[in-house]
Each structure stands twice: as C-alpha cells, then as structure tokens.
Image 1 (cartoon, helix red, strand yellow):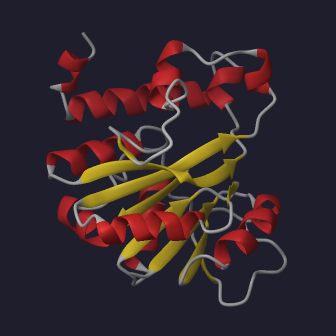
Image 2: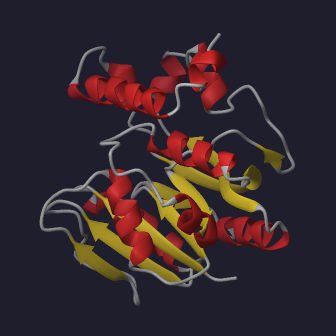
Length: 233
C-alpha cells in the first residue's frame, strides 16, 4: 500500500523546515496546503506539491481538500510541527496492510513542551492522550489525535470524510467516532514515534478565542451524537 501525506500549514513555514524533510522520505506523495500567507518555507524537498487557499479553511475542510487532491490508498494527515522518527510511517502502513479493518492508526506522540514539566495534565487530558497507558504493542483505541493520523481512504469515502463544520478542535474525535460506528477499527501503534511541538493554547490561558472554539466544537459533537452524553455519566 502507498501513502499520500497532507500537511496543513497555517503560517508555520519555520516548522515545515524541520518536519518536511523527515516526512518526505517516508511517504509516496506529499501535499502541503498553505491556509494563509506565510505558510510555506523558502525551499521544499523535491517532489512536494503545494496548494494555496484563496481564503482560510477549517482544519477538517483542509483535510478533505487534501484527500481529494491525492490518490493513494492511505492518507496521512499531519500538523506542520509533527516530526516522525525514521520508519514511523512504514510501521503504521505495514500494520494497516495486515489489518484490513483498521481505518485509523496513530503513533506514539512525544510532546515537546516545557509547560508539561511545570503543570501536570488534568485527569481528562491524561485519559484522552493515553498518558497513563504505556502499551508496547498495538492496542485498540477510541480515538487518535489529528496531529498525525494515518487513514484508510476507503474509510474516509464511506463516512464522508471529515466534518468541515468543526472550525478547530474535536474534528478528530468526531471522525474516529463515525469510523467506529461504521465498523472501522482505530489502533494506537507505539512503535511508530512522532515528535510534536504541542502549543497547549487552551492550557496556558483560561479565556481566549481558542477556549470559545473548543467549547463550540464540543457542543457541535454532542449535538451530532447526543447518545455520547450518556457516556459522560
């Protein structure tokens, strides 16, 4: 199986200088979507294609655009500051090749932020990010983070892709949940390691526009899937 990678950049030209060389060596096709001006570095690795948006789109809308603009059986969606270690993508790809019902796989994401050294994660964050679980073998998971996630194109086609109505946050939870309802498995692959520069915007300040976007995203998810309210009990 071959992998098409889609990197969505919202003014992250500097971050791409570190992530694209590592990623381009591991995938069969690489597309960078420039969501706003200043999103592309001066030089790109050979073979990397670009799309420049006329106006900014949501992360989910850009992920759909990237999937529609690429061609391979597996679609990797990545943040511009996510840097895979050697063979990370190959490990995930090989797993999906051996598990035809795996619709979503995610790597072990190593957060690179000094904030976590001072303020330990909240209980809900530990559960969401699997911080208390350190499996050494692939395990089934409820959801995988959109910062670096490998998706089966057949799964995306079946569920209708990402929901572009999520401006930011929770779009990955929604995607994973709809994949689960359609019978697709989600897997965490700890042997695949990716380093991610976690911004932690909503952790650093209590009330920002990101806080509002996060709240709206959670409400959208619960409106779409009211049955999940029972799971909060």
